[in-house]
Length: 276
Image 1 (cartoon, rainbow, N blue to C red):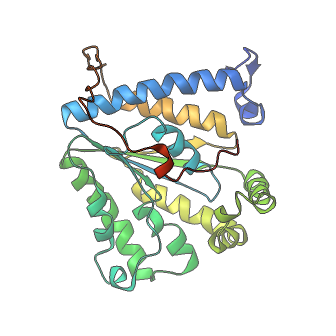
Image 2 (spheres, helix red, strand yellow):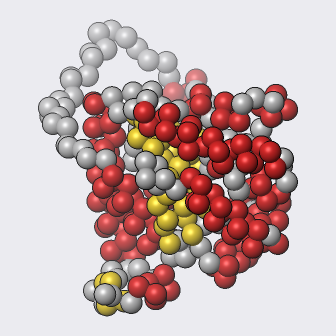
Image 3 (cartoon, helix red, strand yellow):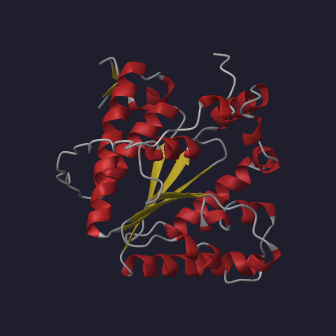
């Protein structure tokens, strides 16, 4: 069965990612979802829930874009993004999951992992940053680790953003040509192009071992960024039952009277030049 795009036209599933979504429709849907995300965050805080969302996928798949839209209207004190860098020499000697555990949520918090412990199943595996023994141990213990998290009361959600070879190449080229995006293109990104098949094999193995009934992977087709964002956020909202928390109407108190206090003259302050 076909799917309607933002303009109401019927689109076959195989062609969906090649059809641009109507911008006005996208903005309206995103605005609606962001209001719902605020309601979800308030529900999580009120009920003391603990939520972890993992975003994985190939380089330039759009993980950062959807995370940005999710967090845009949320309180950063209780919705945190974790994007860890290269492990230190000390961290390399720790139990593998140890550097991630301190970032897990307390009651009332949502944590979004922009890449996660699955680095071991992906970049570390393909680029030779871990041994075969370390890799096999990860595959054996990862489902057990995630079961521990879930049994502790954490709601664990895992997304894999999937893009085609052609679309990744287009996005990489866009980053090369745009000075504001060059920082997004790292040596690891370039290496991932050369090892496309090895990354595919690593991803397939990762899903084979870690796509469990208790902790499934949700694959997001991501050749169309806007469509991927809406689909992912809509799905995320559907996974956690929540209700709108009633709020009393906020009334601003009257401003305090000066009662004889005289402020220093403006000439004593240094202002930013008003060029605009």
